[in-house]
Length: 95
Image 1 (cartoon, one colour):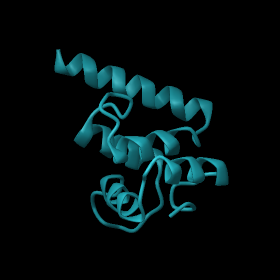
Image 2 (cartoon, rainbow, N blue to C red; image 1 turned 135 degrees about the vertical axis):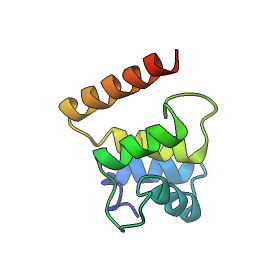
Image 3 (cartoon, rainbow, N blue to C red; image 1 turned 30 degrees about the horizontal axis):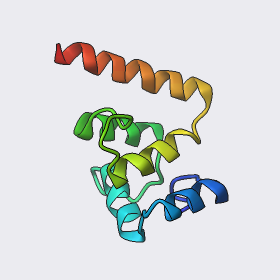
């Protein structure tokens, strides 16, 4: 699962030490792949996640939010800015 989320050894170890289990990783993978295609975590999957669960930075920090946050840190700056813009756009639509 570490490769599925593109996590470094340090990020994966930090998730494990925070209580994240293999089951949590598997269930979160399904949130990032709603059509069950078996693809690795991606920016598109993150957009699906945001649509279903909202901003991954919000509290409380459920296991899926911790995992998605760790995946988010693997993205390029350009991808991160795109995700922030998308979250902002979603927040504006809710108002």
